[in-house]
Amino acid sequence: MTYDIAGARHRVSDPQDVVARAQAWAAERRAEVLLADAAVVFGQDHLESAVRHALRARASGTGVARDLGLETLRYLCGRRQVSEAIRDGGLKPTTEAVAVVVFESSADDLLAHLGWTRDDAVLAPEGKSLRALGVTRTEEGSLPRERTADLALERTALLDLDK
Image (cartoon, rainbow, N blue to C red; front, side, top):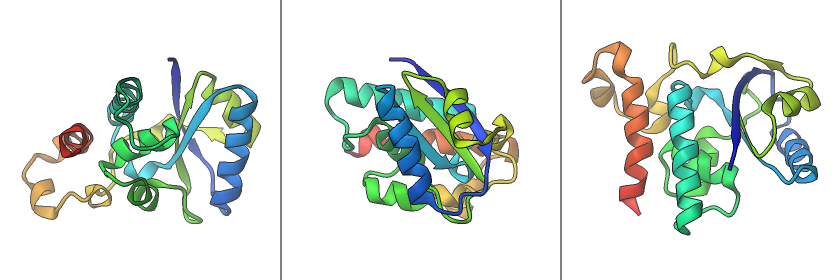
């Protein structure tokens, strides 16, 4: 299965409407999408790792969510429950930076449909708090600042062990 990753800048005033529009666009193309608050993305590697874990979970039948976008969000946030992943990484009325994953279609096409501006820089870990992923101050302080994104990757990987 193919996937396309992008970041975007857009003020999300009505998350439910945005998600519904994106899902309708995806359904027309037999695609699936993830729109997540970029505050929980600690680099493109982190997002790609979550995608690959979700794809493996689907292929092996061990996934929790029926929707590949939500399964990816679970891994991205390191949460067992879909509802917790949505709480932590779902779009909110305050979201201004969005992580986008489109399965079996183009992220740029979705961004054009939504009228959003692509900006992959929003996926970078700089200036973000790992506490959004449940990482404690002690854990975050245990690594040099340039390696803290490794804790996000660890949370993604550990979710498979926590089943």
